[in-house]
Image 1 (cartoon, rainbow, N blue to C red):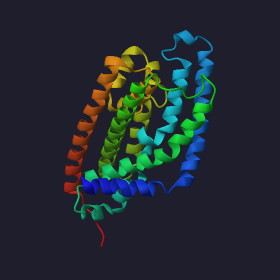
Image 2 (image 1 turned 90 degrees about the vertical axis):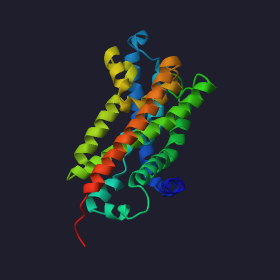
Image 3 (image 1 turned 45 degrees about the vertical axis):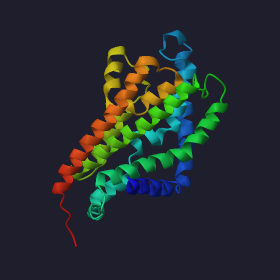
Image 4 (image 1 turned 90 degrees about the horizontal axis):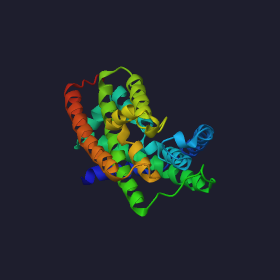
Amino acid sequence: MKKYLAFFRLRFTMGLQYRAAALGGLACQFFWGAMAILAFGAFYKTDPASFPMSMSATASYIWLQQALLTLVSMGGIDQEFFNVIQSGNVAYELCRPVDVYGMWYARSAATRVANAFMRCMPVLAVAALVPAPYGLSAPPSLTAFLLFLVSLALALGVVTALGMIVYMLTFHTISPRGVRLIAVGASDFFSGNIVPLPFFPEGFRQFSELLPFSSTANVPIRIYTGDLYGQEMLWLMLLQAFWIAALVALGKLLEWKELKNVVVQGG
């Protein structure tokens, strides 16, 4: 375990060096968040009672979504692993006296945490200053906030495990672009990154919540806004833990199959 924590620490420290990229991402996230909130605000003015979430909760959802984008979105997949596979440098990874899956998992999670660390607080600080109902509201209680943090850690575990499956599937392809586009598109839709899941039709929403993508951004953000509580919240948090175990097991199986047959040419 110490060696994987060391990989996490080293990659986290390295990720903090990309400050210019973080600033560029901040500008994009502020703009995107503001445009999404203004669009929802226009719809809310027609008939506020017909929406499943209040305008304040929806605005908080969008701001948190933007602040945590690199942490719990499949868009945070690390390009370095694709380059390692395509270039054949995976041979050097196999020479290390550690499990490749565990090493990549730790490094991938660290990259996500480092990127979010530089972007999260500025977004939340500015969003908290925006007048209600368009700004970031406080969570309904301290308990809800603590459960939000627990669920956020579980969401990180799920999205990192999903990313590992994408990396392993790349061994079967000439280019990772197709696998990556499909994974990011499915995740953005079913995790609520495009439209929050409570806005989906009832039957389709229940189906979407069973998918692993829902266990990323959807669950922790809805806990923070107060839209998710009680038995439904506990059920979805248990589902997060289940998906971590299932996806890691699937990823390990793919690793065993792919690395057993990998061939690296060159001298």
